[in-house]
Structures are given as structure tokens and as C-alpha cells.
Image (cartoon, rainbow, N blue to C red; front, side):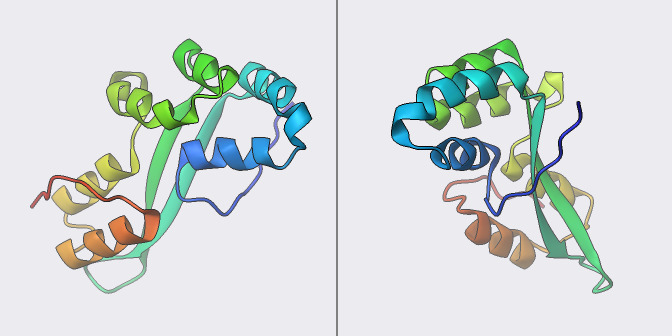
Length: 130
């Protein structure tokens, strides 16, 4: 089965927590186990104005359900998901910060807009690129 859903969150780990938190606390452990077993990927997206002034560019955080990700979800360690996403670039994962940096390097967004996106999604520490 293919199920697509949308949530108003700023990151992949936040999306996982939002799904789990929708259930009563006494059911959350079982929900985490079920989610870890069935999840394939989470993509978190924000839109930023293009540097050209014409249109917007999508900035994506990508989390794939690898064994490490599944284990962290099962064990209620969502706070560690970002670290695994960051160190799993070779497997196709990408943090929001990496996506912002790529958009900056490709001159798709301005430095000012990159900062606005960081603030919007709650990124507090980063390396400026460009």
C-alpha cells in the first residue's frame, strides 16, 4: 500500500513525533513499533523565494527508514534522528541545513532568504555558505 500524508511540521523527526503524539500515551509504544515497521521515508519541505525573484524553490529534508532510523523510532529516541540523517548522506538522506546550503551554492536562494528559512524551521547553528 502507498500512503501519502501531510503534516505541518518543520523537520522529519518532528513529523515522527507528531504522528506518535496523535495517540494516547498508553498506546504510543505500540504506535512507535508499528510506525518503525511500516515507514519507508519522510520528506519535510519548505518553500523559499528564488533569488531571481520569480517563483519559489523547494527545500527538502529527507529521512529514509534505514535500520538505524527504525530503531531510534522504536526506542523513542527521535532527538537522535537528525544526527543519523546528517551522517547518512551517502544513503540519500539530507538535513534541511544541507538542502539550504545546496540551494545557496546553486544560487537558487539569497543569503538573506537562507537565514529566513533557517529561522522558519528552527535551525540555530549552521555554517554559512556562499
